[in-house]
Image (cartoon, rainbow over all chains, first blue to last red):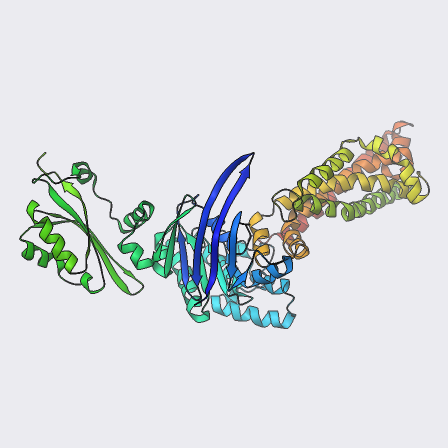
Length: 349
Length: 215
């Protein structure tokens, strides 16, 4: 299958007063048609730069950008304008024209593309319907709430029926409730229009709710790329682990952290992290573990998430029997649970 | 006496609005060019931008009364004579255009960069960005800039009056200064104050009523 967006060896170096700053190290990335692809990273990781290269708002220092098989770097100005009309974009701060009404804002890309007045009229009405703001047609952006502004921005981005929608921290300026509304709208249009969506965010919640695939960006490096549920179950890179742990509330209590040591000494109790998905999430796992391995179990932390209709859970527990570690590991692994020994807790202080 | 005042007032209004209009035609395009050639903007050309900016600054740094005299050959070339109300429009318009270019440049810079970026992402041409995004969004600032320029022009036009431009400045100079006619002086001053207030009020009214969509 041909990918909708393909980045090959994209990198970016800024020159500033004879100092060079490498914002992005060569990155390969491909986004399939019809999927919602998320890029997550902390601020300053280079997400925004990476996203802006997809429609060449930012020129890469090296590498190529392909949109639906077409190489963007090879296009002249007029061709590039045509390609950009097929790529909608929404922003953290909406970027609506305050001097224009909702209607005029949505009509803007159509005017740029020289549509006739009646065609513009019909298309804008259709889009107002889609975002559910038909009654705000003649309002100015200053009279709208943040969520409504982002809806208008979405309608504007969709006006020319693009193949791709780029979202630059589209929900970061919104409250949690409005964020959910906007995410739902994005999900709806993704399904309805089979639109490919590439979004960047620093919120794990956005990734969890709507993304199919995710890439993690850290200091200009693409450190990890997987399906969303895999990312939650076995995050590989430190940054990813931190994202998942803080999202799921899996940070160990301080007193346990203090008593944690790396090697078993026959006395310390093993601390295990279990990650499971699908049906094993629903088994009475702990009860079975206790009888099978003849050990008491102390559950320190647990969290369960439903990610794209699939259940996954993480439990951090302490075995009360220091000698049960091996049998517990074998037992759990046989059930398809991912187990990680976090360390040993010394309880004889 | 009354006809004297009416004529002088009409001359002043003619000088101010005609030169204001020409200044707008010259100054706004200069402002747009200054704006878009800044480094990092959509038609960036830093060397040209600096050179052009220095030229505008040079014009602005010449005191108007000297500028007006220095421009006499040009005025004679365009109008045919360096004396008279119409002739005064040439230096007034050029001086005001340089002023307006800077005022309008800063008004354009008030438009959030994100809007320009959004327009580029929509595939807009440079002309479309200017006409459909930049100018409508900067309109309140542009109107305010024009108001200030007209008020500055009232001051300049009085100076122009002294060297044969006519208008209220000339009246005040001839009657008030050379003949010590205090009454004429006072009336002229009051009239100028009223004129400035009216222009300011019209400009503000336009900005607040027609261009303010925040509430």
